[in-house]
Image 1 (cartoon, rainbow, N blue to C red):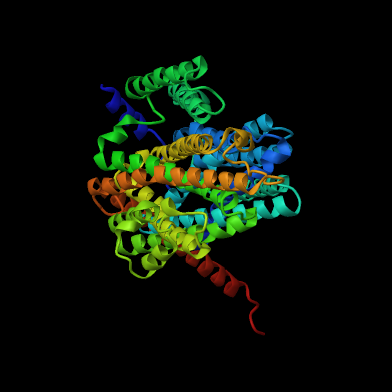
Image 2 (tube, rainbow, N blue to C red; image 1 turned 60 degrees about the horizontal axis):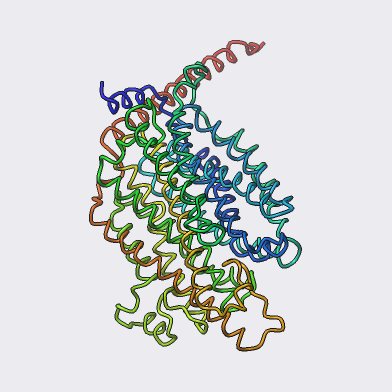
Amino acid sequence: MSPSNQQKQVEKTLVDQTNLLPRARLIIVFGTLAFAFLITYADQNGIAVILPTMARDLNAQDTISWAGTSSFVGNTVFQVLYGRLSDIFGRKVVYLSALILLAVGDILCATAKNGPSLYIFRALAGIAMGGVNSLTMIIVSDIVTLQQRGYYQGLLGGCIGLGNIIGPFVSAAFAETSSWRNFFYLLGPLAAASAVISFFLVPSSMPPRNRKETFSMIDYYGIVTGSIAIVFFLVPISGGGSYFNWTSPMVISMLAISAVAFAAFLFVEWRVSRLPVMPLSMFKTPAVSVILVQNFLFGFAYYAALYYLPIYFQNVLGYSPIGASGLLVPFVAVQMIFSVGSGLYISKSGRYGEVIWSGFLLWTLSVFLFPLTPPYIVFWLANQSGAVSMCFFSRTTDPAIIGIVGAITGAGVGNVFQPCLIALQAHSPKAQRAVVISNRNFLRSLGGAVGLAVSAQVMQSSLRNSLPSHLRSLVSSSYSIPSFNNLPSADIEALLNAYMTGSHNVFLVLAPFMGLCLLGCFLVKDRGLARKEEVKEEKQVSAQTEGSVKKDESVQAGEQSIMQKHDVETLPSKA
């Protein structure tokens, strides 16, 4: 038997964890899952606006970018594992474990005394956030019908936008009024409370299994080789050129080890593993391959923009952390609205193709291509300011124009994030539902980690090339806010121009990635919300559920009839 056929046979032995819930209970369970999901995005993106504050407090201006990078490394390394682990151990067990780890990681972040300890604790939190994110999407797919999937996944996309609004505002408020540490002191208990509530409310359909059999299904070789490949790739590209010399033996050796480990990982997933964490059979479907590549590319663009827009707002335009958060509101608020709206449309129409097309088109336009569009209304207003997209932001860009560009970007993001997940599920077999979701999230996170690393290199290179030698020590990190105290006006101008050049170059890097995503849409056909076998299975489950309900009602009616008869017989007769 070929390895691929053997893997399919093992997948057939996995427990079907579909657990369709009645509407009332579904709303309660979904609300619980959505709250924890929102916490992770508030956590993940809330630190972007307070990185300069954290850098000063911990005396870590040279290394503070690792606060974001370490979180993404942890998130990325473990993201790929969660889908398969939930197949083996059950959704609920893995989900609760991730929530508990998130609570612990955030409390530890609040107690960090120096940069290295903060980066380790952020990595732990990143590992946990990846689990909560993936398992939330997987569990929601298990508890809703095919027709409801677009709507509820759209609501989760709305939670992403809401978390991206709440996180920066709350963290900035703490940084300006008390301490950035209180942001993590808030999130830790919230994550712990979510774990307790989820323990009682989230359903589990995983029966007891033989422990030896369960652990034998784990893809140990794939986990080890994959983790080595990711870590030894992300660490040098995140620090190369700033913390490490690109030609240093350490960087070269780590990249070489990563390449060898990646080759070993591919071999293990193809020929060795009985239940691979990344089934290579996924990539046999062209649409699945394209969507996964799109997720990597827009992960690169999304997280780079989310981290470096606040840097531009603070270092170039001079806004406070709260002011910078305010400028992000149109971006993430419109993302939330369009995510929910696109989910409703997909559930009602049963189609996702035009949603994804429009999303990538709007996103691409907002990043770079506005100068090529006719100057109508918004575009005309934008042209009057000299800032027609992110690539054309300047030191004098009007906040209203930033809001317009951000809103159009948010509309694109809202039509892409969760609709891409729905399209993936439509092109994948049910047995691979969990692993497809986790691998999709893994590639998006990997794109984000690479995006942050590349953006940091672009910014640092721009600052070094733009500044005179006597000012370079003031901008040791792309996340640090330069001090203008006692500087002559000429030096202040040089610093502002250098950060503007760096921001422009970062935004310019994003444009081709979004262009490739848009071109990829030509290769993805809209095939509806479900595969034929899923529709058939769902009808059978619904029929069984209805039959069970009718049987229960019949039994209850019979019991009531017997009780009424008994009551009549036992009534005292009239004298």
